[in-house]
Image (tube, rainbow, N blue to C red):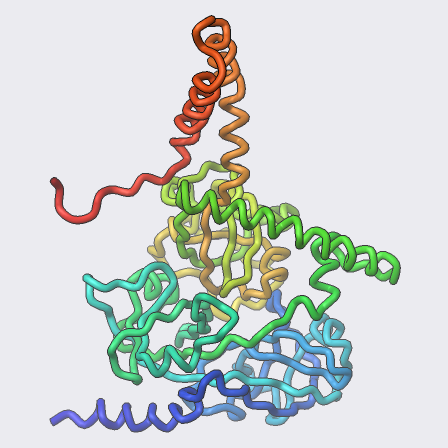
Length: 430
């Protein structure tokens, strides 16, 4: 009789009392700040490997609290160069400036509860959709919140990739999770490999004036009156965008907009200036039911941003030149994509967008088409044909009143029909 599954289960159960509590409070620890030279494009801290349990996988997301009570989400990476001593955390100069701290100052870290699991393959009849996995009911309850309709967790792999996934409960054991092939491919997970689920920290953006100012100014202004201006008009803009969101939801119900998961990599040289533009493989446009130049919505664990999408002139199956690799200014902890990685599952996101979402260069993100601009574009295309049809019908004496209105509405509906994503009938045909 093989005793290894029982031994693994006993080891994993030692972590369960912490995780099975309903949204258990994060663990808090204090570390001294030292200056690090690494730049990762997000607010990150480098910690000594020995300060955490041996089965901890990096990176994961926590919260840093300065002595001035300033809070910020922070990514934690392990020190693979053995330069960070125990009891300290390495933060680069930009990170210290964002937290308004100095070297040798102590900060408090709120570390989320983390649970190691083993990855298994789900059944073909019950595959998790998109960037989601199946877990046991107990684990599902430990990650559930009252504020979000979807239950998110941060998945970290032994390859150093961290990605948000939606959790769905299934009657399975607590020691493993069912990971579909899409997530395994995007994150480099193999059957039976170790993965880690951690609770995503809460972030209350309405408590931060910078969150409102960022909606008006690309760079935070130094003048107080400009910041106050940004806060006021940022609140007004939020109200307008809620109306836009309501319209988007109605259009999503009628025309459909399916989200797809992509692996994030750095943008092409020169695309960082196009701070609101992403690039995907030309073959991915048909799956998203959009066209180059259209708008899409990015979703990372409930954080959403709108962006323009263009075709990638340099797909990932084309090797990067040494000139480009030598010009990379960030530390790439996961390295380049492996050979043969599916190019249609890759999205290039520029640094400003990644910074706004606070996501690392190696993660996965969900993308869906934005419908309101697509509908407006389609209506602009139909303006002359529909107007000509209405004028021609109005010239007929017997076409007046309601028949003319109904005919105009029918023409608009037929003109918008190509935007609707077709859905084949379920089951066998006929």
